[in-house]
Length: 179
Image (cartoon, rainbow, N blue to C red; front, top):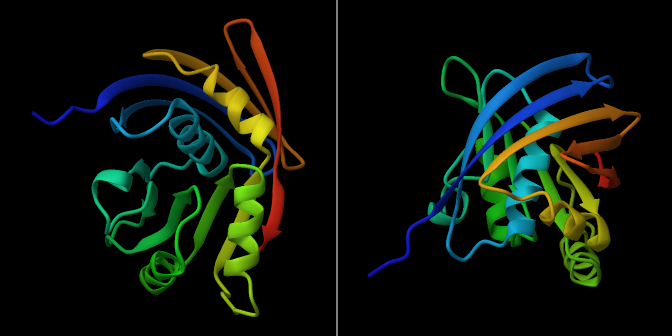
């Protein structure tokens, strides 16, 4: 018998001063049985950094042809394809062909560094942005994971302050490549 996804619910209060975006989102996140709390929270972080009316969690791990999150316009065209982790070059090229903008949120310390040096070998991916989150900061995000979460995020000058219950984290984005 196959294991089922675990459902998490989160109220995300986002104050993004970099984009002048102030909104509360109620989201439901299905955590695949093979997914860690750290990866799931990285998906939530990606949501908070790119929040919009049309941004939704996609198939990700369960559906190979879909990203972790995507933002589609009213015609169904994908305006932003968001991936978390260390995707292979084939998946990156597929995403670049299907979307106007692709953003990868990598994490994992030295593994992320090795992955990026392999992907970035003279390739000209014009509509690709890659953001790395340090291993310590992505691991600290996992401590916020609960079945029911209320998270406040303040974003200013590329720095994210995340608060949930009595925990406050400061997350710095290391921009490896900007589209």
